[in-house]
Length: 99
Image (cartoon, rainbow, N blue to C red):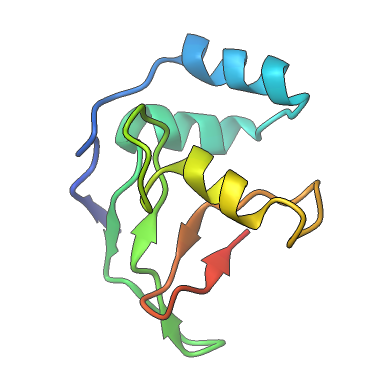
């Protein structure tokens, strides 16, 4: 799989992720932290999923610009709408989230 538009909004360091984890009382999996450090969001290619039949339009990144592609924005939007232990990591082209 290729990640297009990786680090489009800048890169992130392990220290930034650790600060998020401490502030949010969340521990992200090591493989997800490595992914964010390497790509910090982007579009996977190929991006289709067979079951359910959908696409992965975007994987959220951690950055300062507050917009739809931002992990922190997604956390705010879905706070109280998904269980507190779930974290939105991306979306399909219909606006559905992956947690």
